[in-house]
Length: 109
Image (cartoon, rainbow, N blue to C red; front, side, top):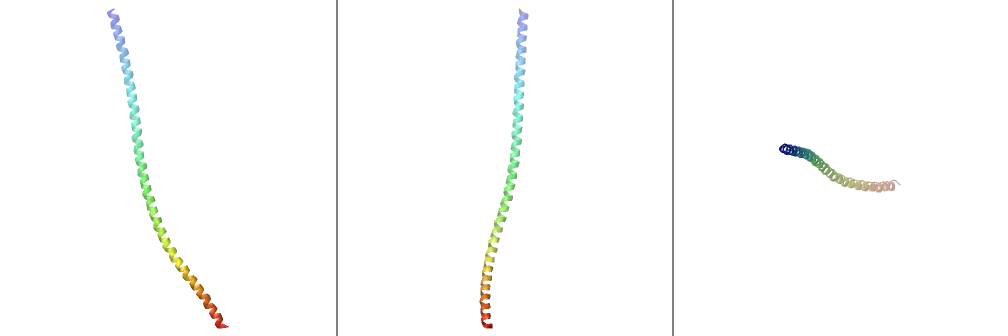
């Protein structure tokens, strides 16, 4: 009976050992999975920082382009105003030349 009890105790210990090994294996696997997930998240975060940096650089470039366009539009508005003045002056000169032509025709008659 002592031998049976010893065999039974050894059997319980073996099952307990397998149970503990199984739990350890599960925990190691779970930790490994968590480490992989954490690594992926860190890499994703570093890529996000890269993307944010690129977006900031693109925004600065766009801002420069907008400022340059705004400056060009101001210059074009000034040129348009000058061209309107010149057009008015040309129209006055054409009207005056018509009057002069009429006066010359009248004199030459």
